[in-house]
Image (tube, rainbow over the protein chains, first blue to last red):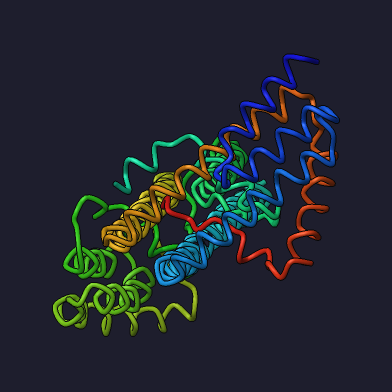
Length: 119
Length: 255
């Protein structure tokens, strides 16, 4: 348990939040140990810091998000085209099987007919 | 700068659990999906082929008729090694010689591919004459198109389809890689400004922290359900402070 507490302290030390916030989190850890409430506090602190970073760098973040959205849309379109091609190939294989089966059956029927006619 | 960041382990995880608020922004793994799709089609094709192969024992010299597209696919395999719009044109001509239907379908494909790569004129011109003849012959067949005779024809057609699956997979992989590389460069460019470099350095700390958090959760035996509940509560708290899930999400700096 102490080991987990030590690891939690190391995690808090690494959290990209202000020193004052870290101190508050470490104090809570010493008082209550590793609780769900503490984990919520850590997540809220990191979430606030991330939101601040994003706000401070809005043009860069917007640009990256736009690029990600565009990339995902292009990837989805490329995959959809690939899917269509694979569906066509599957249908081709179906058609081929049907064609071969039909042709084979017709030939067999014809040969049977010829045999019957000859007998 | 950007490529360096991609090596940070936390960023791989970032693609799955993507924010401090726990809202997940999962990216479909198109590569894995494509591989699964290819395997499924291959396996289906192989089992179909083994079924019809049995029939060759009793009927080998049959007349095989195929629809235009299937005939084209099989014809396409002949020129698989030749690249570009010219290849499509040549496939069309080859198809016209081998099968009216193949050529007819290839005509459309030649134009389509030619337009796509900007070399349509040549491909269409090369194909033109064959298409006209092929079209007439196809009509004479009453909508049914003779592709090949007997077992050999069937084998060729199936081989063409199998190669088509491989070609489709390779083409898609190339396109997918191209998109990834193009956007990777664009993101690299976006992060090459002074602001971008500073932002990436800061974001890297968040990503590294998130990786450590995941490791800690595992060591502390915090179950997924428990972490999800913790995340939900954190999201609620952030929301109450006027921070939306989007605002507290880390931007993807990895391609």
